Image 1 (cartoon, rainbow, N blue to C red):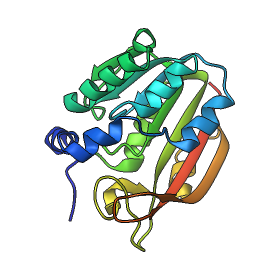
Image 2: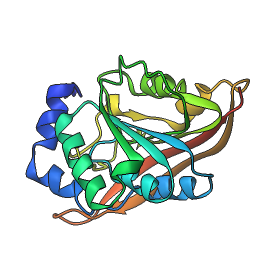
Image 3: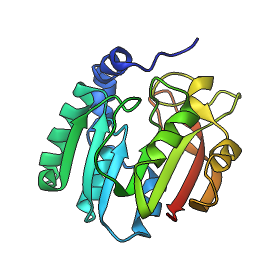
Length: 210
């Protein structure tokens, strides 16, 4: 069944106790951690930040972070978490529909981790790529298009409209503008109350040349 991934969908998702609990004390995405550790801290945007786990980790490691999400409920959790982690002064939270938002800023790092807006997934990645400053980094962590029952936090399997192939992402990055530094597929276990599930991921890191 197709998912709308609109504001109502995400407000309902982040209104569930399990989603709120998942935002408290959760570990940041390991691919985001690995990629960011290789970069010099600057200004970062977490596009579709949810409860802010990755944004808060970045802020704790020297980044000035903007977290943008369509869900006010998610951002309320993120703000509380940032305060508890003593990084409130390193974080800015913006409630925005990323399918239409036109930010005035550009960032040294634009990261998205499993964000699903109400638009085709690849078009979303192309949209946020425009927000990377020259010399900056785009980091995409997404659900790999896969049909053998992967599980994630928004249902039993990522729907087709929320998944993408590695080749689709890399082909969308014009080599005159981008240098692709990392293009990988990974599978990793995800502990759940019902036992470990498996996430099938695509990870792309690219540097904007111009």
